[in-house]
Amino acid sequence: MAMLLVLGLESCTDWLTTKPDSEIVLDDYWRNEAQAQAVLTACYRGFTVNTDKGENTVIDRLIVWGELRSDNIISGLGSPLLRSDMVEIMKVNIKPSNKYCDWGSMYSIINNCNTFLYYAPGVLKSDANFTEGKLHSMEAEALTIRALCYFYLVRTFKEVPYITTPSIDDTQDYNVPKSTEREVLDHIIADLQTAQKSARFDFGTTADNKGRVTLSTVNTILADVYLWDQQYANCVAMCDLVLMDPNLELVPGTATGNMFMNVFYRGNSTESIFELQFDEQTQKNYSAMYLYGTSYMPLGELSCPLFLVKGDYSPFDYKVGSNLESEIDKDSRYKDFIDQNFGKINGVYPIFKYAGVVRTEDQQKNSSYSRRYDTSKWIMYRLADVMLMEAEALVAPENPSDLDMQRAMYLVNKTYMRSNPTASPLDISAYASKADIEKLVLRERQRELMFEGKRWFDLMRVARRYNSPASILTYVSPKLLGNVLGYTKMSVMNALYFPIPQGDIDNNKNLIQNPFYDETTSSN
Image (cartoon, rainbow, N blue to C red; front, side, top):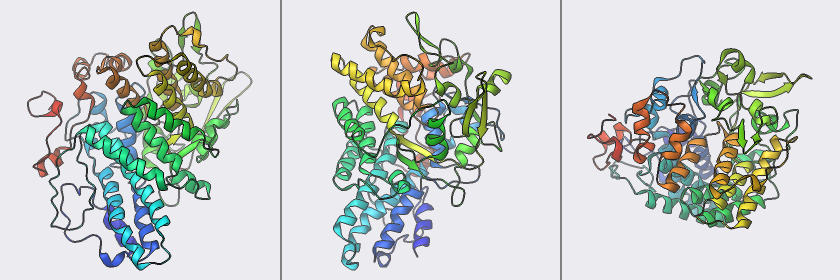
């Protein structure tokens, strides 16, 4: 029964617009703690279920929504050739029919969470061993997972249907209209604040502490939401709570690739906060394998553009005044995250992060790249991300204090010096203005978090802060060279969000297309 329930829940990928043929959850099922746990497990499993092509999955969307339109990514040389829908997104030719506009996999997870939150309280009456304490801690996990899904949706689409009732039977109204961005963000924040009260600090094992929602996970997601919502003081407060967690610490950086191997190859490192648990036996991370590569497919479908490797647009080859802020021979991330050997010979720079085991150097500083045979976990949040969130929140207000600027520089140096152990710490005196330090934080986030599904949302935060796409255009302009129409589209704030999926527009009479993509625009 438990397996049938999970499969039934996961089949509702289009549940917003497709009514169920019959009830998918029976009241008789919810009798004990094990049954409630099975549904909660389905909430997590929704993030990792995919096909052997890695298509139509959540991880695909985390990469596509968070990286594809940014300056981090261009097409690679991997086989099969990059999917046409991804190519169109990179061309800024995004139509409502594009399959990566399909939000069904996210709403399937949301429906699982809604089902758990609706039925689990009833188990208290039938299972004496299922206490209110257990219920509330499990509810905190479901609330946080639901909030995280909605956070991805609201950042990608801006306005989305907000639903808290499970898909149960044919009597429900499935024609749900969009909620405003403000309404969705308020619901997300409220759910996370409720989850804070009951979330567990420790599950007792490393895999559970990294793969399940802990209190630090809740605080981290809430910090990210506050940063997006420009509630900077609240973001700083949440980041400080995470940084005080004694179970979390940065993995040291060494010349032998200790940071890369522990964080991205082995996974579940001391700095990991929330990490999706893929493995060879139950579920491979096919999305990362196809898009970034493995030993079987050294060239992924995506790669890093040459203009990020060196030159005026590179965060790894950047001058501040007469000094180099980041030098390609000193910053280990330059070599660890991007395959420099293949790029220097062929002009295409494969992504090594998530695809590799370790990079080694000989005495002449020549690198050798060893790629993984097994699958990678996927890091949703890690401590370095939180440090740089706080740095951004400290310098984002209109008039940050000198103390806040100094604190931001300290946090940037925490990640910078790990990867630049032979360099001198960055000195705030080299940055003449608040704007200069803002750009430094953005560069350091790019250096540290590239290819982790963060960059587009980082750029979007800046655009939203100044209510202008100018900053995004500055970074992506070399990628759009010659694409006049794409550049023109990206000059419109509403075009920076995705359109509502066409199938849902067709089936839901109450859904209205996002402004830039309605029938009167030229984007269709």
